[in-house]
Amino acid sequence: MAGHSKFKNIMFRKGAQDKKRAREFAKLGREITVAAKLGAPDPAMNPRLRTAVAAAKAASMPKDNIERAIKKGAGETDGEDYVEMRYEGYGPGGVAIIVEALTDNRNRTASDVRAAFSKMGGSLGETNSVSFNFERRGLITYPLDRAGHDAVFEAALEAGASDVDSTDDVHEVSCGPDELHAVLDGMVAAFGDPSGAELDWKPLTTTELDEDRARGLFKLIDTLEDLDDVQHVFTNMDVPDDIMEKLGAE
Image (cartoon, rainbow, N blue to C red; front, side, top):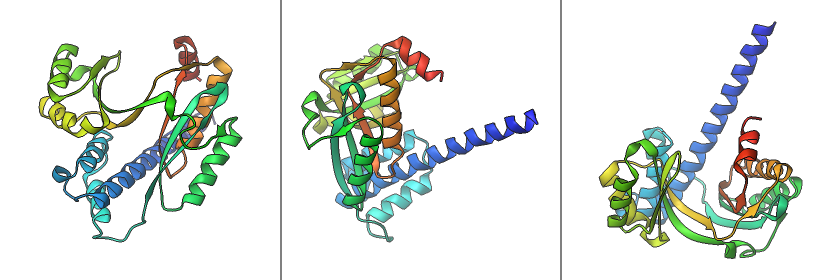
């Protein structure tokens, strides 16, 4: 009986991981489709599409999925008409939150996002109600073992980046939003495809959370990211390392 239960638990976790992966691919595919629709279907001629494809490759999205999403955006196959939406609000402890979405039904998405905030102890605000707490930037990430900090820093500056932050896990290359595609090209030429490339919201100020509020915020983030239309969730949270370790072990 114990073995059977263990097997079921393993399959449940695998099923949850498979669903999460499928959801991630769907969101990456949606961004590729929108990028291909708004510009040329050739990544070499379309900076936004090039960034979207780089992000998809970094997530190990199958080549067939990428090509299918591009064809959909180019009008070669039938598909939904997506629009970009941004929602802003506050989570537990007064943490500022920005939610970016791609949707074919604005009313549905707004309702789903509002419900998530309300259910998880947050409050949805008006446009620009929290974005003043953030700076728009381009962000390119590489695994730490791809190259040393000095090499990444030198290549990033040469490509036009503004800063490089090397942590225990990754190299984070920051640049102005308009420079993202040029910097990405330079970094790819030096180190190959990154593990991530996107427009990001960097908090200018942070809000420190205790354990209970941090747990509540993570539940809100999970709920938002589970929504099909939500692409990204950004916050200005600051959670002490000991609390992060404890929550990560739960």
